[in-house]
Length: 95
Image 1: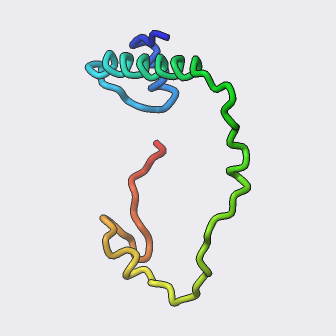
Image 2: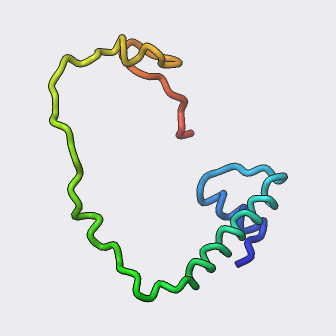
């Protein structure tokens, strides 16, 4: 499947991404190659291969929960780029 720069613009719009015009052609080529690889995988012969359907039922090895004293804001916020009392300050993401 051939992806065009128009397709890249539509995908970027849906993903709320800004893509420079200089990169759109390269991204179109990269996405096209990814889709070609997926088409190649679709042609793989999987005859006689057992399905992996029991992965969700395997048991994880878990450690026991341990109680302790919480670190507190001074330690957890020590490396924060910006803070307001006991809170992280982050840039606005909604205009």
